[in-house]
Image 1 (tube, rainbow, N blue to C red):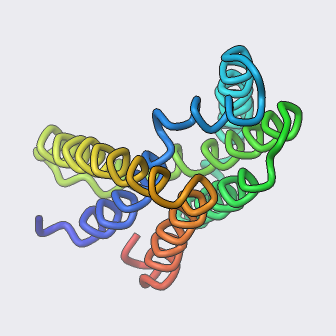
Image 2: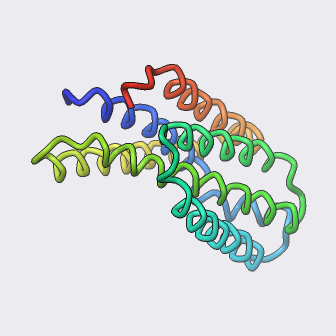
Length: 184
């Protein structure tokens, strides 16, 4: 791929997607370890989705006024990193729901800004190819992340998983932060 901006976005957001996917299907196992019943899984996941929707609506009203969209992306990374670290300290449904709301806020900052940066840097007459390339990267890094997450939890536990997810995401944060602003 000759497009340096997309190559950079794909590399760093691909790492981030892989890190986020590490929790993936293990989320339910994590929740039922300290909250009895699958209803807690549903409630906490719904809190994430509803908060993501509300915050995304707010971002949709204000986000286009921000000149440097990569700063929204960086903010989304940081909030989600913080959320994953906070999951280490969750021991009841209330604190889990609050962390999921915070995670939804991070999602509302990161996903629309990534999509906007992606759209800004698409090459003319290569939209299908470039969207397909991103889909391949996102799906394959998610699959690898899910497998790695299972191995980490199996061998070291959830605390290690959350720390590893956060560490990988810090790589993505600094990878984007340290790139020249004109690139993105």
